[in-house]
Every structure is written in structure tokens, then in C-alpha cells.
Image (cartoon, rainbow, N blue to C red; front, top):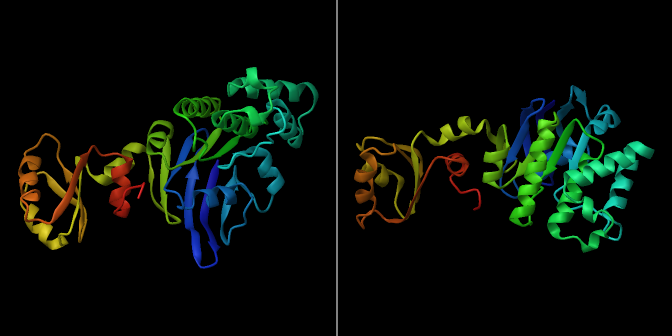
Length: 309
């Protein structure tokens, strides 16, 4: 459904997106996971035709968006990170405006609006002015605008930022429902739990580059098969290597001065031997944390820092 090849965009001396390539298959939810400033919004802006790339190509259903923009944009539904609603209008009036932009008229427009409002749970507040909506309701209305014309491909840029957990779950349920109906979804987020629970496949992006892509199982294997131990302090890399040398079931995933990421076989003898060596008071270690392998540990393995850092 979507092919991105060598996509690049610079702002002055900053390469916001640096030659990224990935594919989104028909009918799947594909996640673009990365911290704020990673290049997610810039990527969405280029895929949707809002921002011209410095280099690269975007094909939607085999059509180049920059060669035939009108044809591609008819297939797209776009939900931007910033809520784009008219607060002095009612929810219904907002949808009338957007439906009209897509050429919907008469009974077809009324039916599409009613279905969109029902889908996002705003049918009972449709005729209230948007300025009286909560933040979560505005987010849901924003989502309905991207769905009003039944797009083949939906672009969602951080659609749950800044809302309460209940509204967040409601939006995720809508995304799943839309995907089950056959719509292909590209979903950007910096929330790992959303990516883990929602996406069929995903790519991890940081500082404008795709670091890895695949299914959740494929990605988590990058952090090793065992539990993940994150170690930080004032130690030297070689000193730490010496301390943990020879311990069965312990592998170094990433190491540097003052930082190490270790993979430890769960329920094996390695952890019992490792911890006393790390915590003997002479190793220069300030902090040790352990967790099951997940997207957080994958991001640490790839970048040497937590997603939230």
C-alpha cells in the first residue's frame, strides 16, 4: 500500500529525516515508534504531500504522490498531531465542512457524518459547540475528520497525546475497528505500550533514521533472548567486561564507559553470580535495573538510551 524510498528532509543544517525507507502492507497497522523530535511528524507530512522532500519517493498504491497528488490524496485520511478543529462550530458542522471538501453531498454526506460521529462516540454531543468539548472529545472529533471519506490509507500522527486514559483507549479501539474493515494504517507514537498492543509491524526511528523494523517478536529479539539488565555509573567499559567475564548465561548487548546493557538468561545461575560482582562497592556502579525484553530494551540496545531520555 505504501512504499517509502530514501526519504530525506533537511531544515537548515538539521537532517530531520535522513534517507529512510520502509513499506506498509495492505490492511496492516504499521507503527512508527520514536521519541519526540525523531522525525515522525516530518515523515507523515511528506507522505501526505504537505511537505516536499529534499530527496526520495513516496508511492501510495503504486502512485507517486508528487506526480499525481490529487489522485493520492483522495485515498488518504490524515489525522495531525495538533488538533485541527473549528471550536466555534458544532461537531457536526466541522464534519459537514470536511465532508464537503472531499466532495460528499446530500444523503451520502449525512450518512457519512452520522456514521463517523457514532464511530468515535460523539453522536450525543454532535450539535454542541466544540469549544465545550473535553480534550479527549476534540481528539476523537479530529479522528472522525480523517475517516469521513472512508480512506484506503489512514495516517495518524500521535493521536493520543495529552488525553486521559479512557479517551486514549477509545481512540485505539476505533483504529483497530478501522483496520479490521480493510483500511491500511500508519500510526506514529512515542508510547511503547501503544505500539506493542496495536501494531502488526513497526519501525523504530530516532534522529531521522530508521534503526530497525519488523514485528514485535522480531524486534525484541534484538535485545537478546533473556532478561535485560541496564547498568550505569562511573566505571570503564573494559573494567566492567573483566568483572562479568566467565559468567554463564550473561551476554553483553551494548557497553561503553559508564553504561552497559546485559542480556541474562531468566531463571539461570547467571544473575545470582552477576549481582554480587556488580554491587560489591568497588565497581563504580550507581544504578542497576532489570526488565523483560520489550521495545524499551530494544531502543536502549539500539541507541544506548531510554526512549524517554
